[in-house]
Amino acid sequence: MWSVVTWARSPRDSLAVESHVVRPVPASDCQCTGNCGLSPKACWVRHSSECVAANLQRWPRCASSPTAASCAAARCSGGFGVDFSRATEDVGSGIALVAQRILSHGVTSFCPTLVTSPPEVYHKVLPQIPVKSGGPHGAGVLANAFHDVLATYGSLDNVRIVTLAPELDRSLEVIQALAAQGICVSLGHSVADLAAAEEAVQNGATFITHLFNAMLPFHHRDPGIVGLLTSDQLPPGHCIFYGMIADGIHTNPAALRIAHRAHPQGLVLVTDAVPALGLGNGRHTLGQQEVEVDGLIAHIAGTKTLCGSIAPMDVCIRHFLQATGCSVESALEAASLHPAQLLGLEKTKGNLDFGADADFVVLDDSLHVQATYISGELVWQAEEAGP
Image (cartoon, rainbow, N blue to C red):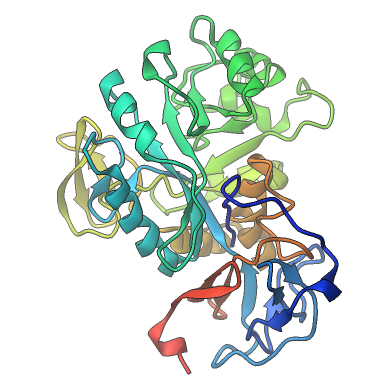
């Protein structure tokens, strides 16, 4: 899986291993994800909280368990009763609660997401969600994501991802300006045709928000945004990333297979979690809307329109693996390495290579989370996995 905590960290010190205390993370008889897939190697952590390679030591009750870079949620609108799109005086306490609760799902960092809201909501909420590192208190905050950028939304200092519809007037101008600020521009909630989508990518867009959902369906004469996965009009060497909600509700398994086989390197698993995540059936809020949860499905109250997901990241990974028949490492990379690459963090996040941040998870053979580590420190452990 994967992690991401970025600019909150201090500058890196020397990579000379001999100048630091190196200690093994307990993880014996495990398989670590890496550039060559799953392999029986170690994850050792030195004093600077970076990974170095060595032989494995025993980790209780996890024989042959995969050890992987931890997960990150690129889109999370809330969870456990917390709605990030509600303007309160103490947004931070809600962020902290979600950050703590998602550790059990192998997520060590996330992008709190605001759905389309009145300008006053953005002005009040965004300044209260700074980028921060993760730790025992909970997952780290990478940056915010929100839809439909307008000049009235205030400062973009804490914003890392913006979703917009490329067919809107002056959208190319907005894409160029956002990309120049290092903000990831995602295409979604759109009726754009393929030509408009290609032009958006040529001007700096790099991501597609939950592919197949909230966009024109694929058509053989004009595949729309979906056609970006195999387009020959993208800049040379450019990789388009795309989010997939693999919760068993939003996307048919056949559609998951089509997307993965067409462009596996760009697939990013997203939960699109809403505040109802972790709660039972009933009515809950999402920004200005009321959401009704029935079993595993969340609808806008009084309609049959899907409204986010209530499946956590580890559930999405397991469903994706089963639906596509891909390798374990491919499923894990879709929730770790690929999101890190999308955000330009692949040197320190989303992998267990030498020098990477020591944020990772230990899984059992069925990919259930047994333990979560941030900076080499155990921050969550399943009861049955204890000594």
